[in-house]
Amino acid sequence: MSSTVSGKSGTWRNWAGNVTARPAREVTPASVEELSAAVRQAAEDGLRVKAVGTGHSFTAAAATDGVLIRPQLLTGIRKVDREAGTVTVEAGTPLKRLNLALAREGLSLTNMGDIMEQTVSGAVSTGTHGTGRDSASIAAQITGLELVTADGSVLSCSEKENPEVFAAARVGIGALGIITAITFSVEPTFLLTAREEPMSFDEVTRSFDELFAENEHFEFYWFPHTGNCNTKRNNRSAGPERPVGTVRGLFEDEFLSNGVFQVANYVGRAVPASIPSIARISSRALSARTYTDIPYKVFTSPRRVRFTEMEFAVPREALVETLRELKAMVDRSPLRISFPVEVRTAPADDITLSTASGRDTAYIAVHMFRGTPYQAYFSAAERIFTAHEGRPHWGKVHTRDAEYFADVYPRFGEFTELRDRLDPERRFANDYLRRVLGE
Image (cartoon, rainbow, N blue to C red; front, side, top):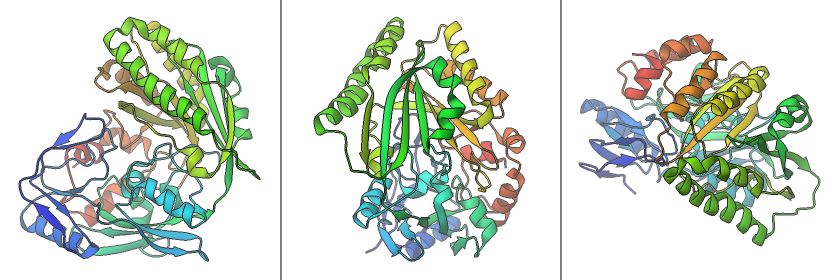
């Protein structure tokens, strides 16, 4: 099966619709060899190269005016190694397909984010994560990866093979090459019991340390203009399985969390003054519930309401103070925020540019409904986050640059030196990488 190459391609848009690009051509390789050939051909033509997944990044990390690589033919599981507890998967595989395939094999990732539309390579390259006391981001569960570099050669990387590339390429923002396959550490499927319940903002922030320590996976949402939060604790369970009932699931996850929420956001966008009242109702709409299911059904949920997002990772011990500052800023401003603020955690990891690199981390994510001006809110939030040495998610809106990152990432220079070695001509560069990594 050969790759498809379209000549003058159309406009590429990301999921949120806030980033567009007009590549010179698009290539859909059906094998690693074809991908290598496309990279070499681009070099001959003097074009830059970027691979795009499902466009779930809010930054222009994947935008290019050169060759756009679409990885949808590079999908599926290459190998299941039960003895080693690993699964090797092609880079273009959507997380949704990976989770379903693993479940059929009686296997699961230890931790995952809350959506599964992204491709595995897009998710890990931008540092996608869920929440966990002991288990970290998706990239931290990688034991090996295969990378096509700027000269078209294929590098295998792990702790033993090309370890310095492995340390960086797990969260490589597409700067070091194009990932073609990833080996994840997996475990036999287990059950999680989720306990969701409303709590007040003051109660959550006051008892955050205990809630974090007592639960394997703790997260919460605060609804701006209210003192209300929704909390979620996920812990391993001996069972039995007690999934959310179909009717209740449809009502709460589809009707309330997607349908009614979408309508409420349209109303809020048209009449911003109505947002605080809507927020008070929204924050009380979801009642407490407990259910037990296999991991991906507990960790992930459908997200059909489109939005724009900024997320910063702050040192975990700075979370409560940062969040209180954010609430005080919203309370005294004329801003009207219809989307809840999401808070999660991750343990320190050893990946060069992971947002949790070398420090125990808490994440604070702010969202705005798609089509609503977000700059004033995000700028004010970013000022608060950066005062606490916050590190922005590589795939979400922020205005930071290389100078800032050199300060907040102790190993930043290690990454840029490796990039100089692997991609001296900046074959994989674009405007976004120029800003965040420097020339």
